[in-house]
Length: 117
Image (cartoon, rainbow, N blue to C red):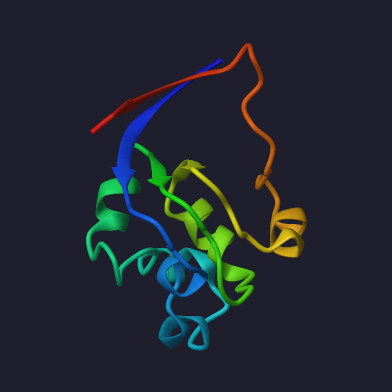
């Protein structure tokens, strides 16, 4: 299987407040509506870049650290983020396990990904 998508790069320490800010978390339970705000504090145009064709979110160390916002993986899914590739992750294991389509395992040897930036 090959997945092709644009790569959108970020640095270290992308916490759950950057993935979805608390100012939006408490306004709605509609993940589709909240997805437009995904990553907006570090890249105000993330949704516009990711949604049309999908995107790989590429990050450094400590991706997903901080408070365990269960909305964080959901807004990434609804923003058409195909995969998160990070040097290390501090994502909440509870949020990851309870989110459909969200896995913490690495790609299988038969999988490949293509990224364009």
